[in-house]
Length: 466
Image 1 (cartoon, rainbow, N blue to C red):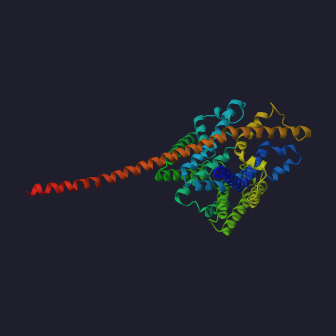
Image 2 (spheres, rainbow, N blue to C red):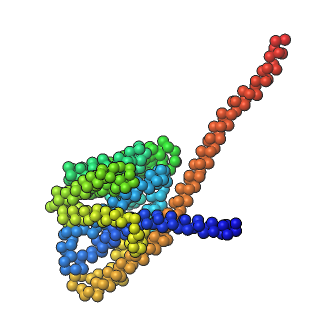
Image 3 (cartoon, rainbow, N blue to C red):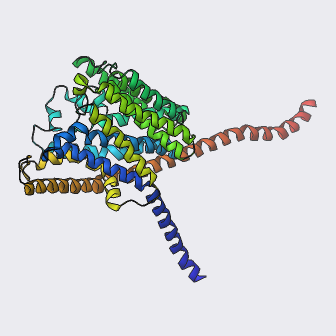
């Protein structure tokens, strides 16, 4: 008996360890894809291609940045709806997102404000007109949809992520969250047919209009989140639908990006959701293949159709070849990783995936910080030794800063978020028990009174008959 008692905790620990290992193996491929995507974005902003003689050819035919962000968007499309549906709780989903994103973002911006020279973002935010408007738009992470500058150079992608969260939340409360195949196809078709017809900044037509728009959106988004935080079904539904409406209007009426880019970003995210549903048997796999094939083909074709001439100046890439090659390769990377999803991926890749958000935030500020004071930026003609020192030194600084932000901010804040969710759920459970108890008591009192009044009437009736 004593031996069994000693072995039971050991068996439980082994079971938990096996479950954790299985989870790591199941999600390791996503971490690996995140790590590759984040590293590609770092290389883009690092201008690695400027250090080699043939770098211009690389730039013409391939864009590390577009490749990285489209890969990120595929991962988000795959995992975000799954996270929401697994929880089944809109409030918990939003609290998780807030504690996941905002603390690391705020800490990064504050450190930049304290350490970087005045000519760099986000220090510039304090030197622009209407500072409260800019800060409000950035706090909502909708600045790219509100005609406002980004507090960090890479934050434009977070505006697309935020609108995607709005859309997914609204679809979930309406029970339409499994209809993403039609949404992905429709968005890709929109990119093909309406590639350059969307109005950019159609609502923020001037300083006054922009300020009014930011104030209105802040009220709408703030009210929607308050509704959601109540945890009450009808208010949560109302808040989620309000977020969905705000997101769609801003993305397609007031975005900064040219039309086909906006359509394809959201088509890519919803196609990632289609992959998740096909993998988990929620839709037919043939349907999944056809939808994703259409989105990939549309993504390549819109680049060739629209990313030329003056339109190319408004996009993130050098031209249609860079767009097409980068977009298709992002899908190829995601697809190959998914084929091997049941295998363990190299630990360095999964580690990069774990710190990918921190790396995404800090890599440009680190570049500003080390370029000059610590390292000398080489040119094509610089000695190879100087290039090696520059590359390795910069990457080492980025990785160290990312690990510190992840360890000191991301992890503790995510843990705090889980505690907040747990306490709110416990509070709701106690409130529900109190309401149920009050209803039971309210129902029992009339019954008790009726039972107590019966004998009393029987005793009084003979008196009255006398």
